[in-house]
Image 1 (cartoon, rainbow, N blue to C red):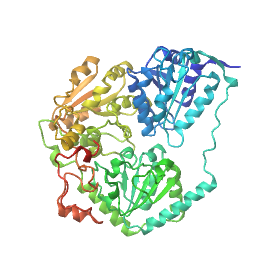
Image 2: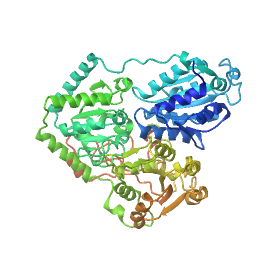
Image 3: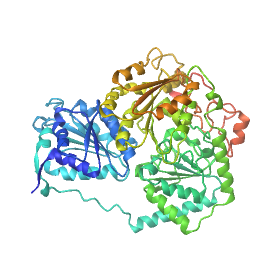
Image 4: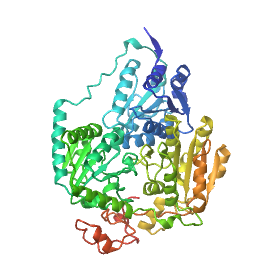
Length: 619
């Protein structure tokens, strides 16, 4: 019989899946797990400097690696494991397959009952702590259950709507010698749909196509579920067959890319190109792989796509439950995006589907809205004393190639990127939208680098976010990581500064410049030994973008966008329909863009001024 230390069995399990990098912070309670790397030639640990950064790196690794290979991160007990909470929340809300492993104190020193607060040093109930932000948690006390728990948790992490799991393994269990021939595994049920399931979906698709034929203004809303399901190619073919305008959510900007001929802009409370006119004037909305959050609908949910019949296709049954939908959808189809799109494509081809000329008129109208309401204005490229960030990001997108990876952060810099960065087919572009923590992109970019070192990795982050995991500059040095890190430095917390001015009259300066000011990132980066560059105004950025994109090794670029916090277009307040965005266009022009009736009060839109906190939307 084959005998092996349980810690080695765990590391071997993930290395055999193709996980070639695992992110760790060493501690006594995970010592045996880390020691197991010394006996494994298929995978290596990456010793980051903070557990949260390791969790973010595991997310970035999983997002770029794909093929149902999870990101894996290991921490010690107590505070080490607790530092994974935000990372697990990221993966839970963005549907990322990830494995978080924590070492636990010796099982002999664990509390015997909930009435006892703590016995062991740095003892903490990880299963309870992580329960709400994982698909599964397990404290492993029986060494002979390890094969089952590894296989079962992997199945949960990678199947259905993907997500993270947490395994908590005490020190003494890690040390146990197990006989692998005797271990019982997990036998998953067949994932293939029965013929009855497929027939039901085919009937639903037949009804959908009938509604498409009746419709004169149909649109697709494409969410991150299409990317998670690796269903892009079928989506492109369907685009060619139906010629229907497509609008990506922020999780799908590298699925429906800016160069795709049916891409008609970006939607939501920071709508960007097209200012939401296509979605709002539609008479048929087909949402695939999106939960259709408040960031898409705005706070006045009754006004969202209000003249449209609405279809939602999603793998998550809870999302499809009309009792829980803020915007009730008329038809809800429970199906994986890949399977749905394949069946729809096959149905259209089999029936020799041909679109009519009215659809072309509608498509051209939506394309015209996208072009007319580009949020990046020509004036932004004029020379200023500082850098205009929308102009900088647009030029960056023009210069990056189709094999590049852009990892962006949160707050004002992600709004700037999603307004200005135009994606190309083949690029990967991601952040974390579901949880959206400051500081994700720098560590996420490290994970992306290890997932595929051959691709050029560009990280966009704000000055606020850079402070959150700045210590990982040392990880870049330790592992000779090649990342181009761009700090959009406006010297304030920009998005919250704008929110504060809108809703609270700007009375406090907790967002800066007095309550908060960033450090000198150039001096700090140089102290770590990382190459640096400064860009101070628009006249510099053309040449310098070329320089840092083509430079050898990692570089930190400080882009001076001093005090910029105008992220427009956006809705103002939480009662405004998303087609009427600030800065407001001429009222006659607005009316001319509305095919359906505008919402009452459109003639006199809400103007920026102090409003009561209970009327304010979120940031």
